[in-house]
Image (cartoon, rainbow, N blue to C red; front, side):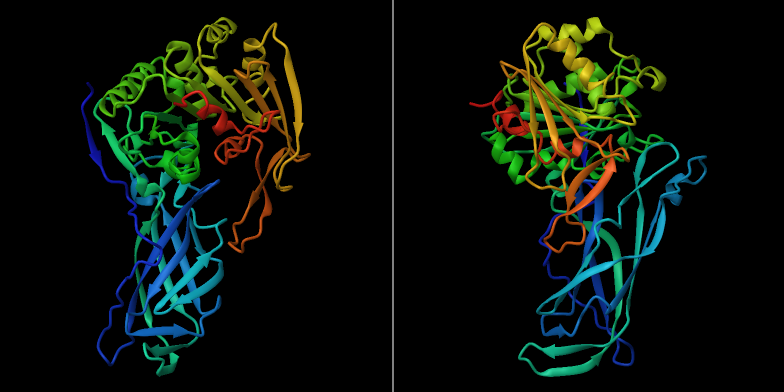
Length: 458
C-alpha cells in the first residue's frame, strides 16, 4: 500500500455568522475591529464573496450601506514566483465592488460581486496558483453604534479595521489534502461509514502543480470540479460517495511517460481498500486534459469504473502537449469495457476540436448502433440549449451545447448576489460547468449525475 501523509487545506470551516470578537484599543485612539473573509467556489473559480465585521456582543451597528466601506484587495503570486521566469499577468489590485450590506446585531456582512476577487491567479506557465491576499478596509462615513439594550452610543461612529487575510470556505473545508510521497497528491472527501461508492475527478490542464509546489488546492479552487461532488445535492443523488480529486504533478498529458496511469490506479485501489468501497461502484469524471486522462484510464483499466462523465476531452492537442492522441483502435477497445460513458462538449470548441474529441469517441463507440437525437431547451433561458445523442441501451450518450455567434457558451449566474439569474458567457471550452450543475439531460429527462448514480445504485 502506498504511504501518504495528510496536511490541512489553507481554508477552514465555520458558519458565515461566526463571532469574531472586536478588538478595542486605548480611549485616545479609534477602536479597531477584525474583519473575516469568506469565499465560495463559483463556476469560474473560488472568489472572496463576503466579509464579516463583528463589533462585539455588547453593541450593534446601523446606518450601513454599500458606500460605507471601501475594500481594497491585492492578489499576488510574486513571493512564489521570485527567482523564476514565471510571470502572472492576472495578479491584481482592485477596490472590490460591494453589491449589498446587511447587519445582524453587532455583525456587518459585506457582500462582493462574485465576478471579481478570485483566490487563484493564472500564470504564464499556464497554471493556476493560489495567490497571497491582502485586504485593506476603510470606513468612508460614520455609522450609528447602539448598545444591546437599544441605547444610542454614538450616531457618528468611525473605527479602524484589520484583516488577517485568511479565507473561510465551508465547501472546500469538507476536503482533506493528501500528499502522497512519490505519487499523485489529491483532495479527499470522507463521506462517512456506511458509504461504499467513490467519485474520482481529473482536473483540466490549468490546475496541474506548478514548480513542484505540492499546492494540491488549485484543482479544488479553479472550478466546481472537486466541491460539486461533495455538495448536498450530489451526495443525495449518489446516495453518499467518497470523492478523490487528483492534482497532476505537472500535466495529465504525461500520463504514459511518467507512469501516472499506474499511480492513479494504485491510489484509487488503496482508498477502495481503506474505506471498504465496493470496487464495482466507482465513478469518474474529468474535463479537458482531465478528459484525456479519464479516457486513458478507461483504455488501460477497462474494469475500474462503472460510469464516466467526460467533458471536452483533449485528444486533438495531446500530441502537441507531451501526450499521445488515442488511436481509433484504442478508443474502439473501450467497447469491450462495461464502463458507461456520457460525453459533454460545446457544439464548437475553440480549444479542443469537438469533431476530433467527444464526437470522435462517441462515433467510434456507437458504430453500427441506432442513435437517437433529442433537442432540449433549457429551464433557465440564460443557459445554452442542448442536443443529446444516445444509444438505445443508454450506455453511451453525447450532449452538445449550442455556442453563440461569438463562439461562447451561455450560463445562468447570480454574481451580484441579488437572487436573480443573469446571463454570463464563457469560453466554448468550458462545457464542464454544465456537468457540475447536473445540467446535461437525456431524452427521458434523466440528468447526467442521476444517470451515473444508476450504475452504482444498491
